[in-house]
Length: 178
Image (cartoon, rainbow, N blue to C red; front, side, top):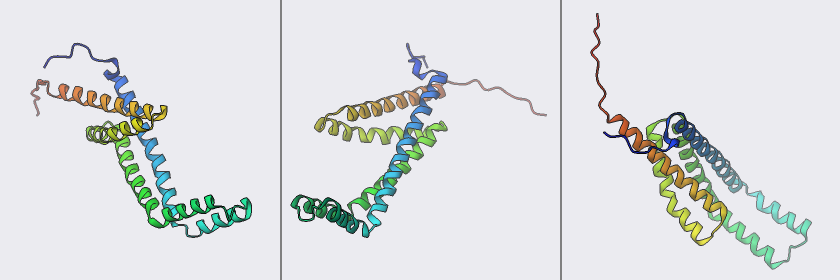
């Protein structure tokens, strides 16, 4: 197998490992944030007295008890809490945080299966991110989209390079055992 004409410096030796570990730490940090979000959403949904306390605070402190806007917002919040939307969102956040932790720890340990999992999981969300940036353009959304595109390209390049290196025929040596 022939060597590529030019291999980016980012894919060579220690730099490759450094970038893999940086990506893994990024995924672990995202997983930690989603874990906190999921637990807080489940905790918020489990509180039955929370709405009563919020209503009492609005009535006592803000003195907007008879305001149509506040009543509308309170009813909307109560509908979301009662409808199970927050519980479903919390469970989804916990599931995806488990996926991110699995990706991050596996890539940090330089496991090939984790790199494949990260490529598929990250690439599957890119169309949603493109749609989000298209409908609500912003700097943060564009940066997240670029970061995820870079992660997919980098991991694909690493896997393609590693696959090419494993197909090179290695000469086997006969070892004499006594």
